[in-house]
Image (cartoon, rainbow, N blue to C red; front, side):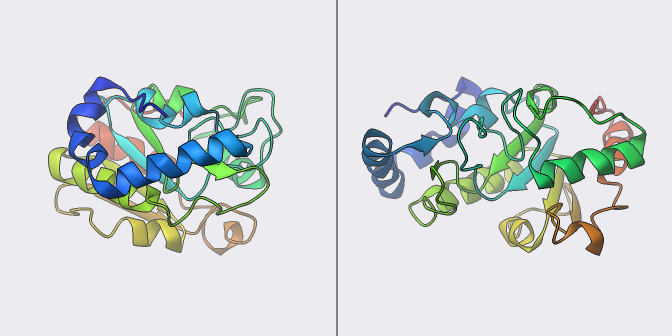
Length: 220
């Protein structure tokens, strides 16, 4: 398996790719993708990075695992392939955007247009077996994505980190809150949505911070 990642990120993460844990992870993925049905497609594993350059990065949203149903995952957390029914968490994300900033709920659940504006849609684990949630956890992805978050915190300024749910909050412990804006809310899943996700106004708050930092706002 080749690491197909944009040059801006490759320069930042090259030392991670050379570490023993990452080489072990690649061997694991080679076995998994050659013997099982896994998501996303191999060419989309690093889509979050290839859709959002390090230079253009303004916002980070942290998810957990890719969707494990056929044709759902496209390499961006919470996002699905065009034409696929919106999963429950994405439904609630779109509902909150509608009430927060007044935007109509889109037909497509593909969030690539967020990524192209500078939103890194980062799952903690970038791959999964079909119909087996969490099946690629604890094989090295978590260490890699922890390093990504730490690198962003260290080398960028005034990035907005959106941490939805306890898992994302734990994932964000390395973020320097003196340099960056961290917004926390319950997870947008049906279990967490009514505990404070609805009404969190993360989308308008993000844009207010970006505007005050003299950056272009996100067209959610």
